[in-house]
Image (cartoon, rainbow, N blue to C red; front, side, top):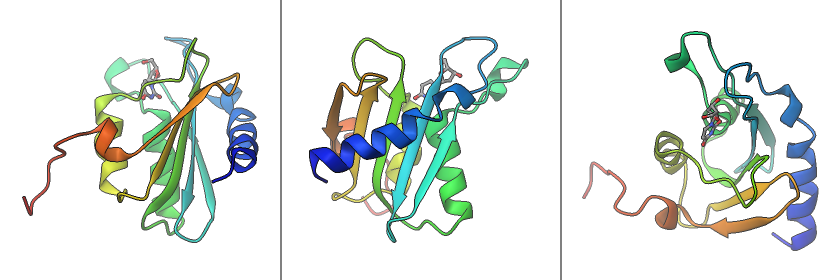
Amino acid sequence: MTENDINLLLDEIISRINNAYTPYSKFNVVSGVIDQNGKKHFGVNVENRSYGLTMCAERNAIAAAVTNGMKTIKVIAVVADTVGPISPCGACREVISEFSSDDTIIILSNKNKVYKQYKISELLPLAFRFDQ
Ligand code: THU
């Protein structure tokens, strides 16, 4: 991904950040996935009055992607209104790992496009696997 590609992707993702449903935390998160065919899928966090049912943006983006035929994640980006790049929760790291390979690009950013790029092995070292 060139810097320009990343900028355009982050613009598309950030344009959806106000769709997050966050009446409780007021902490909006938005995520975008590019699948193996180059198709884009998006998700925001959706909270619930029964707090534990809250769904994170990354997992919603991945669920939308799977629904539309995603098999592997080529790129996933996560954005929040944070000082530096957002750091995804452990549950989302596990779910990202499920659809990632060593080539998957993970972009963590804030709303001002201050971002850093990672591999899943950096975000989730020693991930659980059946074939270990
Ligand atoms: N959240 C995400 O959407 N993704 C993460 O990786 C961390 C947390 C959401 C859940 C909740 O709606 C809000 O951020 C505050 O925890």
